[in-house]
Length: 136
Image (cartoon, rainbow, N blue to C red):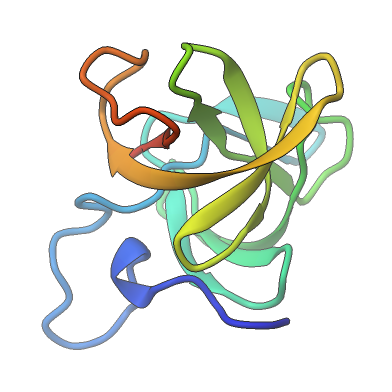
C-alpha cells in the first residue's frame, strides 16, 4: 500500500474524536444499492488499501469502498473525490499520497499535484500549483 494518508485528514472512531467530518476529505459521489448518490455529508473515515477506504455515508452507515476516477459511477461499492486544480479545472483523485494526489481529468489526462483541504469550489485564493479538495 505504501504510506497511508495522514490520519488528521480522515475521521477515525476513537474516544475524543472531533465532530464528525470536520475538515475531513469529502466524498463527491458514491454508489450503493444500484444508485449514485451525490454526497453532501459523506467523508473518508480510514484507509484500507491504496484505493480501498472506509467511508461514512450520508445515512450515517459506514462501508469499505473503492476509489475510482469515473464522474458517473457504474459499479456498486465505488466512490470518487473531486479535486479543483489551480486553473479551475475539475478532476477526480485516482490515488492519494501523503501530501499529493494523482488525478485524472475528464479528457483522460493525468497528473500529480500537492493538495490542500478547503471549501472553495474554484481557484479563487488558491495557491498556484496546488489542488483543492472539498471538506465536510
